Length: 337
View 1: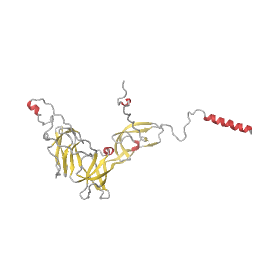
View 2: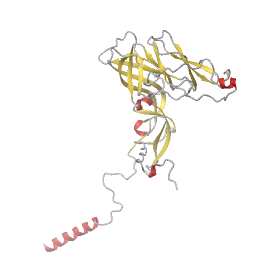
View 3: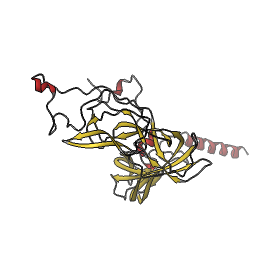
View 4: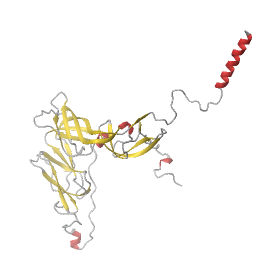
């Protein structure tokens, strides 16, 4: 018996000695090596519809914005806000560019609410320059910043459904996607039919006629304050509306046929430019830039940057966190000295 016990003790010591050896090369059971990609996808081609659901309410005389049709200089007509809706599309401002004038109108059934830019200000295409009020009932949906980028551009179609009420129905959008103040109307300015100074056909400034200094007038300060973002649309006349009633809106802003797409989880970014991680044969990641297009909330269009045969890691790359306030390494131009 004594010999047996000794043999068992020696075996136990040998086993313990093996466990106490070097841990190098020993992997934890159930875990993959660091950097191993667990999930991948390949781009596919399919139709994409940029469809967004919004929650809105019925309101009276909602304010909406009219935008500049292109880059240029805005000139306003001497028109003041009124409580009477216009009975036809009405000219309220002009945008001049390269000697050509484009008229800006408020739509039939609306009222001028004010100017959103100083007269003779330089404006860019799509910038709100006039605010108007729709006369009567309208449907207003508030929009957060993430939705605003998906709604950037004209809505191709809007369908509405009133909670516990009529619908679905087509809802006609008004103006731009923005909640705008009513604005103000300053003192009358030069006739908007006269080209800006320096354009063909423009008359000389008063200083030039009297021999004075021919400096151009400075653009006055001002402009509209941001007040949030909203979409305003109107229901057909046969739809009964009640002020304050809740409405669900389905907005389609774009469609793409047979687009190259990836799941949104595989992409860093959601508008314009983004990044994806390509997976090489050795299961290593390489981050590349891509140009993004439409998204339906599940898939996102890859307009360029991929050919279609790549293997892409899921989830996509993480964007670096911003450095803490006061961090000396926060200098975007890199370390100095």
